[in-house]
Figure 1 (cartoon, rainbow, N blue to C red):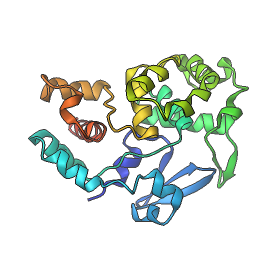
Figure 2 (tube, helix red, strand yellow; figure 1 turned 180 degrees about the vertical axis):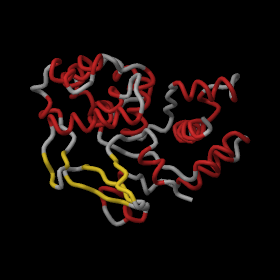
Figure 3 (cartoon, rainbow, N blue to C red; figure 1 turned 120 degrees about the vertical axis):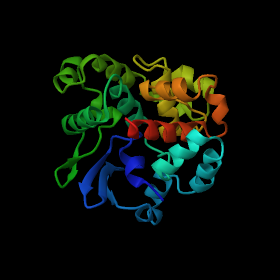
Figure 4 (cartoon, one colour; figure 1 turned 60 degrees about the vertical axis):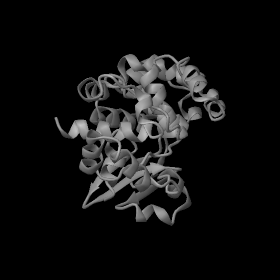
Length: 245
């Protein structure tokens, strides 16, 4: 069964809001989108690409579940989830905001950045600011809306945003190295950016939850064990271990 809630609100994206009654909304592509199931995305070209509907996630889920008992429990307990294909800039800033943070606070910072630097799109909603809209930002302003120690990282990302288009053609290791030239972007954040924006399925970010999973269940394994589904396996394990706490 498709778990659209976990796909949208489980830490891949901070654009989506729970509107209640099973509906979710986000400001993307300069408009408000609303979905309640994956079927709502199938007829819209933008959402079709965003939800990566051309990829066989059911086949991948079955292959992941067959690998071992922990992955079987993770896939069965979570339901089918997808890897979203998001805007490079939005994901870069979102995961800079994610450092030493939780989903609720990241979402709040995302909203405050949108209201401060983005533009209205109707219904009291605002777009996430593009690079040009943020070029006038100062460290003081960014700190005022709660970004804290991440403020200078955001400013450096603004200065280096032109590299994002170059990442597309790079081998994974080179892309990881290039992204880490941005202040505040380490291996975990770089890996998240490559998965959730560039569809690099070999990514395997290690946050506190995944370190717990690997320590308790895969002490003698590394990301290569999960090949060719490293990123999707990680997302299932990440979702599952949080649900156990």
